Length: 163
Picture 1 (tube, rainbow, N blue to C red):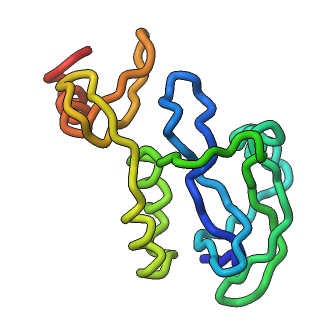
Picture 2 (picture 1 turned 60 degrees about the vertical axis):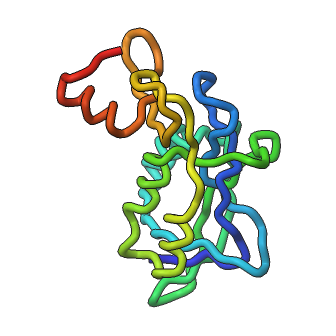
């Protein structure tokens, strides 16, 4: 576990994929002297840094910047990815499955920080199958990406529904 002080986690990084709605946002760190970001510090072998850079679309989408984090044992200099200014917008929200990915590290987060993440509003839209307006995930098949609510996604996984 690690803490990055003087930054705030926001979901204000615009989605890269053109098929996603404009209101979907991804994680970003923003300067904020009154806040902090909790997470996990990873030891990345320099050989794998190129893979991580490609995954984060550095340098076009994110900048890799040096930061100081606090762990239980020490203060350590490392780096974090911060969205390029032209890739940021206001009013964005994450997809539920993206937020759940961040919450998978909940055992490393303080209860207050975990609760704040759990309380983050997520994207809601119209399901391709049932046409209800709910939290969605986007599934890909040969026809493209399809927004599905969780019940329809589970039915589709069991073979009960199709597009």
